[in-house]
Image (cartoon, rainbow, N blue to C red; front, top):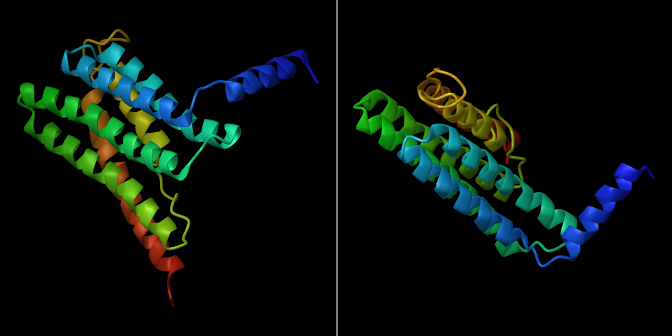
Length: 196
């Protein structure tokens, strides 16, 4: 085993033996996304984008850590899924508030649609899996939606990464791809359940 692999194994074992729980990681992810929403609401798009990215990474790590450490529970899985929806919704709500403040009603409507469609992407997966069908199909799972919104926040007007305005286009792309994903999942489940 290489020195790097040994260090990774040691770090993994220390993490597993720690008091850290998957639920603590989930709650930390939520807290970071609330911070991101506050920053976005206060025109701090770049910092909000960074907080959103770190919070979203925490949201993906909790499930992986749960499986790796054996510290997971059914309630933890439920909490993780619930907080993921809240995290995404709270940041998009701050984005909608910013669009509303600037009088961009079309962008506000697109953001509301993006929130609703994102929730429906998760809901269709959960319902499919409750019926015994794999529900993680489609072009915009959560990881893709996080990347799209992150790009929008990091390249919003006035953000540190240039004088671009990608937040509004990112919201439009997010809304469209989320709607497409919902329909992809509906058709997938329909095909899988044909004849039942």
